[in-house]
Image 1 (cartoon, rainbow, N blue to C red):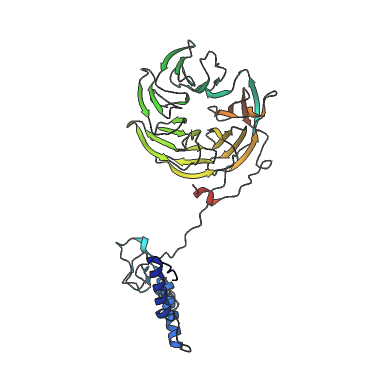
Image 2: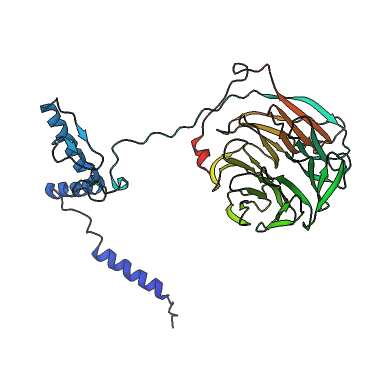
Length: 439
């Protein structure tokens, strides 16, 4: 006997539905031939379905124009959502949800109105002209990678920390430095898990801050309160009382190394960037995270605050992103680097500088993200090509000098080119609206 092929219930039901459709429905969309009345009815239905929202409005506008021609002394009145019963020339907007209904009253919202005035095209401001920067001086002396740099509040000197364990006297490789603006203190952190406070008058360590379980990568001092924020490889950021050495808060939530921390006087007071590709905003009073920014796709190694605007930027190998405080609203992407971005700095004139692990330096206009200059940092003679990385950078307090700490064991100082002008270095700017909206 011939074997019967079994079919699933789904297949049998589908075939039955298809046969029913072919039998009863296939000819319902066709109209009788040479029937003008049905053809006009079909077009009227389609037109009403597509343009029903504007039919009444067009008719009313035409009526108002006709009345305007008969009475040229009376101007055409169009009210915002409400018709004036005493003015025959008054025209009300028709609600989109009810094209055949009465005009909107004053209590109804404008969201349901048909918009008469077209939207203004979005515009991007033209970038401000910035003079190009050039290398001014190279300082040699360290025997290891220069990992950090900070400028003294009086703007008379700066300090650097290196992998050779030396600033003047140092314990181990130094990853972060900060000078107190209110005390003769210099703070340092290193890969030995130590956070130390140095008295600059006596040139010795006066306090240790114990608590990190692994290397400490960065630190920041609060501008108005005597507290210190540190972060490191143990995936935490810690808040210290400078004088009592007490660990006030331990911020947990990151799932990988916290590479950068910044502190500001207004909320959010602490912002951290981590290798887990997130940026977190912390409430210092509550001791908890208030927002987590997950837009980055790769590790965040640097976070920088704008000195005057209520904004900050975060750097990742995918791009640099700008945010607005306090909620961390995304503003725009700044793309161009093809390497890991280790550090950033911004001055009051709106010059944002970023440094990569391949020695590349990019100069951006903060407001528009326009890249007005880029170059490769020169490597000290005798160094390997792999020692072209830039680990840290900062502007002095005047914003006119840029100091970089690099892997070729040197410190470099950059200044603006005094001979440059808008004619010699014009702004070659093409706005990209989509870039500002892309995450």
